[in-house]
Image (cartoon, rainbow, N blue to C red; front, side):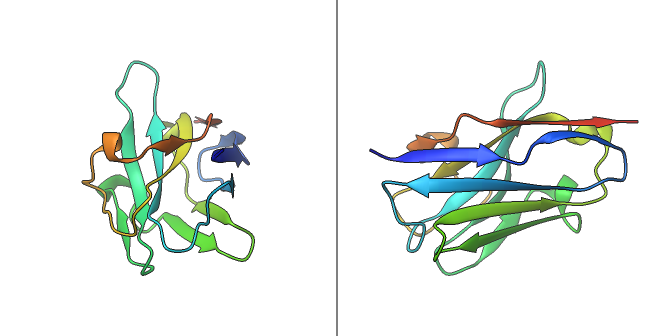
Length: 125
């Protein structure tokens, strides 16, 4: 059984930083595409960043230069380092995984069969 468990969310002030983690079990993070998505209240879930098995990354424009995705295959864990946070980043953040190695920020969410339960990030002005 595949499980993705996010952690690291919380409440911070604008300009602050958070580091999210996504621990995977039942699936190896090496050789697959993984990504971070977010859903703000009243909005559709959107892709934030993806990480292909090659290490290639794809960021949505609004987080470029502020967020960094990384993966530790030895720990089977995906990370999202978030800096210079703004209230517009407030959302539930989800990690997701495919069963293949390729993807980018435009890969439809329906092509990610595995999802975590989410971790809340709240940024106050």
